[in-house]
Length: 479
Image (cartoon, rainbow, N blue to C red; front, side, top):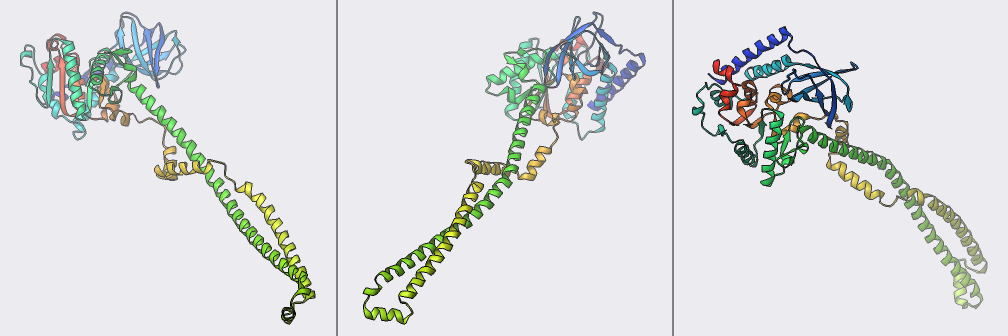
């Protein structure tokens, strides 16, 4: 049986299950007596509700939660159900303490989303990769008593079989280190959220020991249940927390950019006006310099004429005759003095006007200290970003976080298989390697859905004895 045939088999089974759940109406509402908020990270809220002991809700089951006052319902998924305690991740907050809520499960919707993902894998072969999944098919089709003939390791399909869980998980941590060092993107799945937290802690600790920053390379999809595991703070690895922190910083950077851009736009007309005033001031100062030069020349001339008048009677006869020949005598020299004095008075008046204009323009042309340097820094920053048009485009960009782009920047993405099979986000991202922790505890459809997202290699880990005892692949074996 090929991977395509096995996927077709599971599609048929899942569609039949979906029809059965829809017709029988098994998704009955559950009344939770009370609940309280455990923690809030980003836009997600983790609540714990108390439900009747006879209620059993599966992990990653989508639910609708209706508050006691019947206000708008909110959506969420079940992260853990132990005893009468139910941990649910919600999109909207219901308050710190909740007296009572009605929980409406959607098992039929979950089965339908998984079947839809498998159908897409067959309908869009150019978007999914079934090469590594072919090797997984031989494992899923093993019948009872065939565990001794488990597939051997290869470059495409690697198994880590052992009854020692700590050995298996440490082996996965070492393999993850090797793959990250060669720049491979890894999808790490585990049976439920508690085990996913544990394997994330082990892989994160191994990365820290190997000198890698696990906060940069790794993300834990959905909210972690535990606060820490393996000496690693899990809240630092949560996808929602990382994305919220990243976009909070991004919004801070955007606010800073907006302030700088507004300040840049404000300084442009301000400095332009100052430059115009400075140009006027320079012209008036140049006129003042010319007037002062003219005044000094007139002062020199009138001083020479007065000196000549004082010494006119004592001048030699020949010099006096020479001066008279050109029209310079005592009377004409006095006229020259009066003429020069009138010109000086006129120049002084013009100087007074120029000085008054300078006193008026000087404060208008003055630029506050540091303003021009600030403008040059802002201009350089705007130029580096591509100019004012590019800055306006950045500021006008939508505020909605791009979850797909963010998750693609992580080398290790840890999630539960049901979330991988049902969340539309995983239908748009691809990985190089699939690492499966506790594979026998994971249903075959979820394994196949995850296998279709990887291009190169599948690594399967678990206790081989659980393949038969748990029987999660029984449908494939009987098929």
